[in-house]
Image (tube, rainbow, N blue to C red):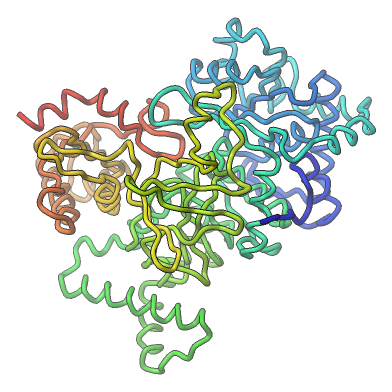
Length: 594
C-alpha cells in the first residue's frame, strides 16, 4: 500500500511546509514562570529555519548525527526539526540517563554535536567527553551553560545563514535516509540504535490522517519523554495535521493539575497516568460496601452501553438515559473534569493497561484507546479507534501495516512502511530481527476473527515455574497496579516452586492513608508496618482471585522505596527491567522462599 503524507515528503521539510500551510494557527503552548505562552506555526517555522541555518554555520554536514539530551519542552522539538532540515540525523538521549549511558549513545552514534538542556545535563557529557573523539560541539538550550547555545545558533542563522544551501539540503533528503536513531531503552543488554527513516516517520502522519486520529482543531497535552518514539511520533503527527501541542511544565507531579488547566482534547500517555487518575476517581470504593461496589460496576456497564449507542447514533431508551444521567452527575462528570473537561480521546501505549480501567473511562466520556507498537515500528502497529473498539485488545492493524502470528510460539510478526531500516552498526542484530521480511517483535499474542490483536506478554518475560507451568506476569501485575496504594509490582518465580512479588508503595497515597491514622509517614517505616502489609495483602488477594491457583502470588515483600529510571530499574516509559530488578533484590526474593 502506498501512503502519502499530507504536508511534506520528509521530516526535513515538515516544519517549513506546516508553517506555510497553517500560518497563525497555534502550534505550541508551554509554561514559563507560571505563565502559559504560545507560538504559531509560522513562528515555529521561523525558529526552526534560523536554528537549521545556524547548524550549517557551525559545520554540521548531511548525515551527521546530533544528540539531544533534554526533558520534553518546545526547544527539543525546534532543534530536532532543525537537525532534520539541515540534513542531519536526530539522536535522542533520555534525560534520566547516567553519564555512562550518555557516552554509549553519543559514542556509538558518532555524534558531532550534543544539545543539552541545562548545566546538569552538560555535566554528564563533560564527565565522559574525553572518550568521545567525534564530538565537536556542546550546545546549551539555555544561555550561559555552554560555549554555544540555541540563541547563538539562531543569531548566526539570521546574520549569515545560507538559505539556498538549506533549501538544497532539505530537498536532497531521501525517503529512505535516516531521520533518527533511537536507542531502545532495553530491559536487557546495552541499548541498540534503531534507525528510523523519513519514510517511516511520515508514514505515521499518513496513518493518523486516514484514521482521523488527530484533527486540526485538537489540543494535545504532551508530557512523555521526546526521546521515546511514542512522544516523537505524536509531535510529528500533530505538526503534520496542524494540531496545537501543550508541553507540560517539567514536573510530572503537576501533570493532573496541568491537564485540568490546559483542557486538552487529545492525551497520549503510558498507562501509569491513567492508573493514577483511575485510583483518584475510585478512591471512595476502598470503604464501599459490597452493594456499593456492585452499584459502581453496574454504573460502568450502563455507561459503556449508553456511550456505544450514542456513538453509533442509536436511540437510548428513556429509562436507560435517566439512570445514566444520574450516574453521570454522581460519578462520571468529575472524571471528565480531572482531564480538563474536553478530552475527545486519549491513547495508552508502551505497556499493557487493565481493561477495567479502559471501560471505566469510556463510560465516563473519556475514551482511552489502547494501542500497540515499538520503537522498531515507529511506535505504531495496532490501535483501537472510536469506530472499532474492543476492550482487552490493542485494536486492529493500522492502515498499511500487516500483522500475523508466528506458528508454534505465537510471536507477533509485523511488516509495513513503519518498520525500521536497521540497528545502527549492528548487522547481526538486524538480521536476527527479521524472518522472511517480517519483523520479529518479541511480543506474544493472538488475532481474533475480527482482526483485533490481543497481547499475552513478552517472550523473554514468560515465567516457567519449577513445576513446568508457564506464567505471563504482566496481567496480574497490572491488576495489582489498579490499587491506589501500589506503584509497581513485579512477579518472580522462574524455576521456583510458586510465584512471589516485589511491591512498591505509591508514595502520595500511602502517606495520605498513614496521615489519616496518625502513623509515621516515612516510606521505609510504612514498608515495615503490619497494617500496611495487611492493606497490601488485601490488594494481592483481590488480584489473585481472578487467576488459577498455580498463577497466584503466594508471598510478597514491600520495598522501602519506589523503582525508578534513575536507578536503572525502569525504562523511561516505566517498564520494569526485570533482569536488573531480579539481580538487585535477589536476597529479598530468596527470603520469600525460605
